[in-house]
Image (cartoon, rainbow, N blue to C red; front, side, top):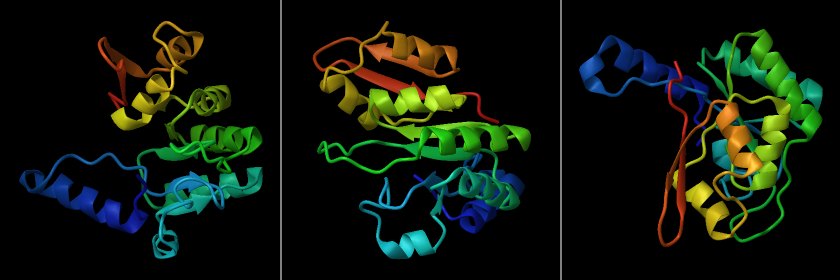
Length: 185
């Protein structure tokens, strides 16, 4: 989930200077998304005003948002690519061109781009744009597996692995896949 840059920056600095006060924080700050896209489809408007998200409707806006993340002192950039909700409701999401602008601008500034994605078409757009790793939570990827859309050994899984995602597959009654973003420093 996204976080206002000032808040997470302060927490990161505090724990860096006082290691026993909390975990090491590697921060992305605000999520880069579009109007009406995830998480703006459910997030109270106040959170958006507090800077939990930045918009990237166009290539230019995407580049400006990446620069804002850099100015906040974040470690990485986090892009949202989600075409539909768990309830199968269509959602607006970033265009391929805006996603590529996020990645190229972030790379030019020395940042990695992580993606918040749920479904195969989301991961495909992100991989095509050049993101390094996914950062999906267990529940997100489980939704894909339960829907029967993502199987271990598929070209999409192999593409995620090739992009640097660490994948662990637990075999059993619901096939759970857990993606993690290891080694992000």
